[in-house]
Length: 135
Image 1 (spheres, helix red, strand yellow):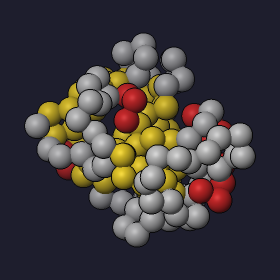
Image 2 (cartoon, rainbow, N blue to C red):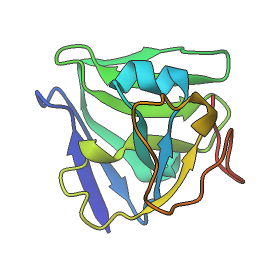
Image 3 (tube, rainbow, N blue to C red):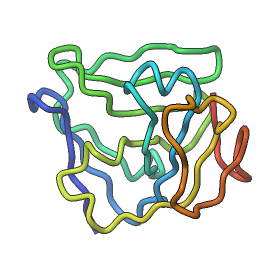
């Protein structure tokens, strides 16, 4: 099972091998500011993740806990990685074919703005969900 993806301009490309985690929606202030709404991410073990083009990849240390990867050319948000984690979160929309993914839950719902509602029936957690790293 191979999952390819990348940024809007193609300067950053990656391949993830094996199963991907179900999509988690993060509503924290950092994710909201970076994406404009909320972060919808899957994840894979770093040993199963390969960058195939990274000339424009930039990392921003958003906290002492984690960093966020994005394309320095087109601005596409791509990754989130806790410094000590063995997995990398991948923005679900950056996959070439995200059709096999399914949604799992919403985290950091205390940070959700009031102009949208969560009505999909998925579990909601005010902060972290069990077993999910957050910044």
